[in-house]
Structure formats: C-alpha cells, structure tokens
Amino acid sequence: MPAASDADRIATARVSLAGPAFAVIGILGFSFKAILIKLAYSWAPIDAVTLLALRLIYSAPFFALMAWWASKPSDAEPMRRRDWMAILWLGFIGYYLASLLDFMGLQYITASLERLVLFLYPTMVVLLSVALFRTRVGGRIWIALVLSYAGILLVFEHDLLVTSDTHGFWLGGALVFAGAFCYALYLVGAGPVIARLGSLRFIAWAMLTSAVFVMVQFLLTRPLAALAAPASIQVLSLVMALFSTVLPTFLVAEAIKRIGANRTSLIGSLGPVFTIWLGWWILGEAVHWIQLLGAALVLSGVTLVTMKPASVHRLSL
Image 1: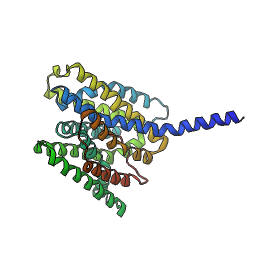
Image 2 (image 1 turned 30 degrees about the vertical axis):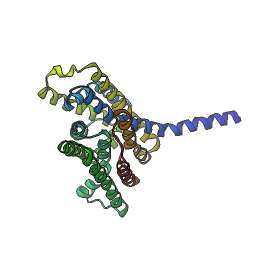
Image 3 (image 1 turned 135 degrees about the vertical axis):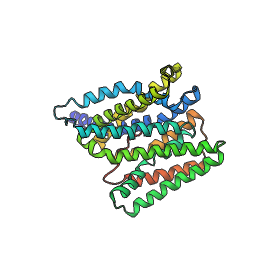
Image 4 (image 1 turned 180 degrees about the horizontal axis):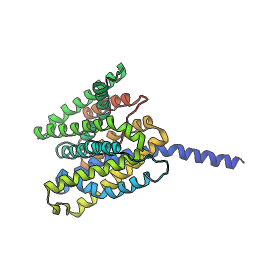
C-alpha cells in the first residue's frame, strides 16, 4: 500500500512538472528563432522574404496535420464563415506581416535587441485596449509601462552609441517595433476566435493562412529558383520550422492548458534572457551591463503587465 502511494506521488509530481517544462522548452525554442535568422543572414546572401518562405514551406505540413488533428473531436466547434474571415485577417496581421517585419528588422539589429523590442507586445495590448475599448488600468500597469519603455530606451541609447550603421539601426528597430505592434493587434482580435475554436486549431489555420500570403509575395517578387538556397540555409530553415515554430507552438499551448495563461506568460519572461545568452554564446554579440539593466527593466514591466487575471497568451512570432 505505501509503495502504491509513493508511486502515485511520483506520478503526480511528474504531471505537475510537465506544464512548466513544456513552457520553458517552448519559450527556449521561440527564443532560438532570432539566432537562426541571424546565422542564415551571415552564412549566405539570402533576403527576409525567401527565408520566411523556406520556414513556412517546411512548417506548413505540420500545421496542416495539426489543423486536421484539432478538428477530429466530435465536440469540436464547426468552422463558420465569420471564423474563416477572422482567421484570414488575423493570419495576415499576426503571422504574415508581423513575422515579415521581424525578419526584415533582424537584418539590421542584434538578436538580443530584437527580442527585447518584440517582448513589448503585452504592453502594446494594454495600450490598444485603452485606446480602442476605453479599458481602465490602474497605477501598477502605468508603472509597468514606464519601466518597460525606459528599459528599451536605455538599451537603444547604448546600442546607438556603439553601432557603425545608425540608419540601419533605426530602421531595424522600427521594423521590429512595427512587427510587435502588428502582433499586439492580432492578440486583441484573436481572443474570441481562440475561445470558440481552441488554440491549436486556430493557430494552425492562421499559420497556414500566413503561408499563403508569404508564398504569394514570394512568387510575385522572387524567382522560384531562389528557393534552391545552399544546403546550410535549408538545414537552418528546417530547424527553424521544427524547433522554433511548430514544436514551441504545441508546447506553449499545452503549457497554457496545464498551468494556465498567467503562469505560462510569467515563464515566458525567460525569452529575452535566453536570446541574450544565445546571442552572446553563438553569435558573439557583446553584452554590457547597461543592456542587462535595460533588459531587467523591460522584464519587470512586462511581468507586472502579465500578472493579471486576463493575461496575454505569449505565443511568440
């Protein structure tokens, strides 16, 4: 009898650890995406549109399988015309346009700065809710916003002093910031659709929709032969598709199911830390104490924003 009790406790402990483990691994996968993009740019003369197209070509079959699997249960909500229209718009703004701007921005700025700027999107969701829905926020949220943007300004000021390409620096920062804003717009509109369809089915269809937009742009602006990139770029694209797109999407969705959106969002604060460390380790990006201070301010502000009942689902680009 005691042995059975011990076995039950071990099983319970494993189940309770699964949610946080899924969240950590998923966030690490998302954080690794910027590193892979920077490696691709340094290894071959490839542009953002072609690299994004390769990423989605490799990931689309998995999202198609995910969409089919999520639609299998007999109690799954049927897809209505309004759902398809919402997915079309949200896939365009949240996964096509936001990702394209992010890929373009990474041609000019470091991976660590990109992740910090992108990490501001929960604060943008709050500001959009205030502007569009007249949502009232308390003093804690305003303090969080001040901390977050003060941290970004601190990092920007430092990086601006050491960069040799001021124009490219501002352009890259603006592109990534615009991508984060597009993703915040997506999150503001995605909530009701996710509630109806479920997160996995919605994300799968939104990603497939974005793949269509990417391929249309690619075919209109690039020769088909551009997809025949060097083998090293093909491998990077495959790794990006599997380990920085498909797998983290599934793991973070499972983490939200097991431990809730709030705890998953808080674990998501590790994202910029992972990227800063990976950027230093793999890309040789310099790390200064001012950057670490700015990152700490951003993390503190975003954590304050996400510590609320209606937390943002942190499913990164």
